[in-house]
Figure (cartoon, rainbow, N blue to C red):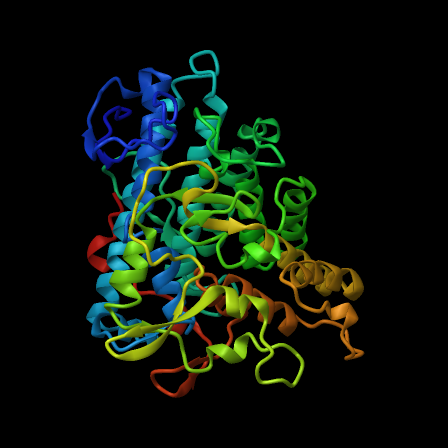
Length: 478
């Protein structure tokens, strides 16, 4: 029997019913048998999901930035809790504890989504004007969270460990107290892709709801669609999923859909230092999550108090091709600062953070929050797919689109006489997405060896350094 009760702690954004678009209700528990009898109830349930996703043990901290960036060696730390993770030592209790929290939080949100989906199954477009949008968002979010769990906790699809590939993660599609069996890596990919493709169909209205020029301050459930899992989020996630799987033909297909929509443009170079600081870009963000807390949690609590730092060699990542020690990529000057802390100078990633903790009232323009996926990633996918096909010149054009947008000399105009390589694309990916939690997954996809700063040693690529420990005591993912 379908369970119609939903119990979740949520902060409800009253998009429909508040004069101020980003007014926030006090934190409350919603327990209502009739919650899904009205459009307002469904929307509140979805808003509750989004606000659960920005908590610290999910995308508000650990899953979006801290853990993936530590694993990828973009951050280093002396803090005992995180140091084992930074050394890719996943057998420690600290690593298991952090992994368990991410696992539990993710499956809890998936249970909320399954409750929404099962209740929507009893309704139709006759009941709710935005039925398709509701369903599309819920399916897309369910797929996106499962995909990140797969990337974190399962071996890569190219692993030679057949037993590990046969038992990846549970793909939970029912709101039930029964334990969901594990699916194989291939099965999880199939289910993620199926959910995303259905979401894409449901979300076609976003073609008209999302304008090419967005100014912020939109109201109602159909406003501020970049804060929702929208049509282009479904397509961009399909591109990312196929890319991670190694199916570059389909990855290119969906990346091209997003690019050809012309809904997402690169920001002006003069805005590089501010367009992501505690903000969701109205130009580059395909999908982002609203929150006022990302800055204080990451900037103060983690990057300073827990002594997380940038590795010594981080500056070298941003050096341009010219042999000039002071000639850096413009992103270097825009996204990093040096700050005095305990009498010492410390290099800090300021790209997505702001020193101010003032969660002031929203006054228009870009929304508080952070990007889950941005348009540059689609260009990198296009470049890699075209390079694999042998169309090196066309591949270079896509890579140069981002390079020139960031104020650098295009590869086509550099006096090297060489075609671009996969390493060129990888280097640009790392520079562009630094601090956004994607680099470790890039390395995992190619099974690269990793130089671990804390060990001063290079660890050989393999399942051991690319698979977080399953929380054995939490394998019932309800």
